[in-house]
Amino acid sequence: MGALATRMLTMRGWYVRHWSLIAYIGKRLGITLLLAWGITLITFLLTNLVPGDPVVAALGEMAASNEELVAAFRAKYGLDKPLPEQYLIYLGNLLHGDFGTSIITRRPVASDLAANFPATIEIALFTIVSAIIIGITFGVIAAYRRGKASDQVLRFVSLVGISVPSFWIAILSFYLFYYKLHWVPGSGRMSPGAKPPQSITGLYTIDALLTGDMQAFVDAAGHLALPVFVLTLYAVGMLTRFSRTSVLEVLDKDYVYAATAKGLPWHTVLFRYVLRGALVPILTVVGVVFGGLLSGTVLVESIFSRPGLGSYAFQSAINLDLFGVMGAGLVIGLVYILTNFVVDLLYGLIDPRIRVGAR
Image (cartoon, rainbow, N blue to C red):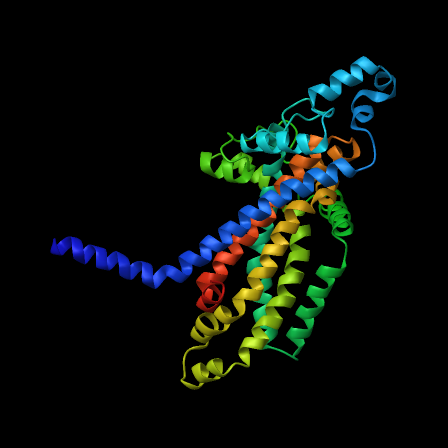
């Protein structure tokens, strides 16, 4: 009995100490679920308000003049029902993992998304990791060297990265590094005739490492280099500027002066005091940039002939493939929401004041 009471007291103490974090996570999870439902509603409404007839786009002018064929087509895809009923059917199908059938490819949209999403997430993951390492490093250096030559150079580099259009950099880098210098392979995810690695995650570079296929890894990484380079320039520009501003604000805090006056090593002051205090606004930018990478890579994917979510969404839109557009829009929206959810959780872990104030 004594052991049980001790155990119960221990559990009660744990809940008391972590209650603010539990309440914060619960609240954020509820908001995330509500936003996810809102994304389904907004995506459905906006897609159905787009001018144009998906029947004509799918069947063509000649076939669309056949009333029986049009009626059968509308009945097959549920387009003959009122919008509220269409939405309820769509929402019910989503809960069962059914995104509908693409009017263009005649395949389940879920299968199309599963085939195209890994190519985009592969670019986004490598880009955001590179951008975090380089951008935060540049921002810290610029903040510590404020007003000096290195600060001016880094600020200029970040301004160029933000200002120059990504598609222009993509075309220029493809011409220079592939056509002229032959430093990297051509377009696509792998060279013609090359065998992709055994699929585990759908990310060629990761799958090649997991299966030990180094030949496939080198080939896939070579094709990935230029798209990641192009997108990293913009992401680094954003993170450098925001990191510099955030670190400068923290450097002027009294607790940083106190830690320095105590004689603590510079790396201790940097990681334990400066970066921890500056990390919240930096995480916000990381979340925004990562979400933007997943939805804004259509031009880069087109230039480098890489199948991806952006290219799929673009093709679905120009062909009035309603289920394809809704599926791509829903996935992009959910990625934004999940990214912000993770960022919110990191806020609470980094700064306890945030989770206490959010209760």
